[in-house]
Image (cartoon, rainbow, N blue to C red; front, side):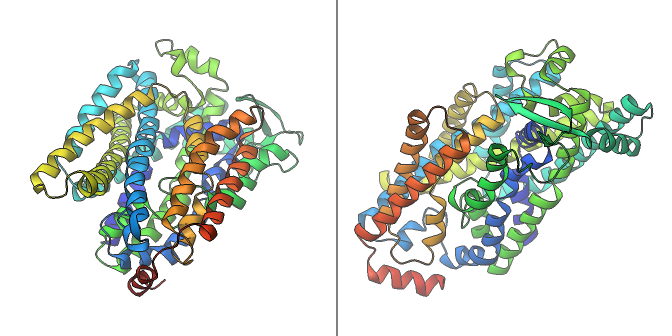
Length: 492
């Protein structure tokens, strides 16, 4: 049903790294920093009104199966197998590494646990469940976890306001805390240099903390957090959960919906909850953290047993959880475990589906028993988590990982929109786009080491998009019979 699919989409995209990442953006760039991901609501709206029904009509089992319905010849099989590895293994493990890094930071702040212990605990919890349940099991547990997580983050926001009220007004009341928070921060601005945010009284030369829009006189900042996402990123960058045209686990849930109507309803519900309702408890908690922990030194001082190498501005969210009453601490820990499990379980299920159904079963062993494929899926689940755990140990912050993901997917987004409507888009366009996005993600920063993220992203998008557009005109074309069959089935 639509409500279960929608709740699962919301729960999946609410991972343990999400509030940490939002907190880091607010502390560095004010509330306006969230436009880096709010801009993807345009992708979500397009998916709801144009692409959800197309995915349902396609009748495919996974979004990678789409390739052999839309394209023809050897290239169709090549791109399906390549993306199964590219997304199911590489991208998937990188995302799980981000989530695991957040879990390590949270456990380090709250309990003083070293990273390896957190990785082992999360691994046992998630891998055992993922290996013994399918998508339906993930959907049901997502529904339960959604309500736990939302209750927990609202509690975190409320008691953060209580602490601000106690510190600034001597009144331990959430409403008082909200009033003094707004009063205190409405006159403050932040300037972030080399990743270090410095607050001062507003003079027009910094980003006002509470402003919803960036200070456009700070052209470099405005380009990075607002202009680039609104003008380019939402349609040009592939990002899991906000893919142009839908895809990955969003497509997985659309395809699993009872009907075309349920698919559309679930996707609409997801976008409203994801972009409009859910962010504000995180943002309020992040704003409170600016008052309580104005810099990293104050976080390190408050948590002497924590590993200073793991502490960053994304650690401010778990640091604020220390002000929860005893009963709510248990709820919050349960909520964070649920947030971690929901995302990790989805990615283990999604990645295993790609590796087994779209690669192993399609290219390696076609005629084995279902029991064999189930066992291979369980083995791949363990393998995926081990790779993700190792990757998490190489990462430093949620923002770093977010920008790497955007960089790798830069320039491929327009292709995923055009392939539904433009006959010239072929499987070779997809291959060229994926290869070029990887090449430019590595090559452009090496060639321009002093360029900012926005500049390198624009160049990457331009080069990758130009490459696959040229391929669309000069490369091999999709067989006409395949195109006609696709149009008759999907009715784009």
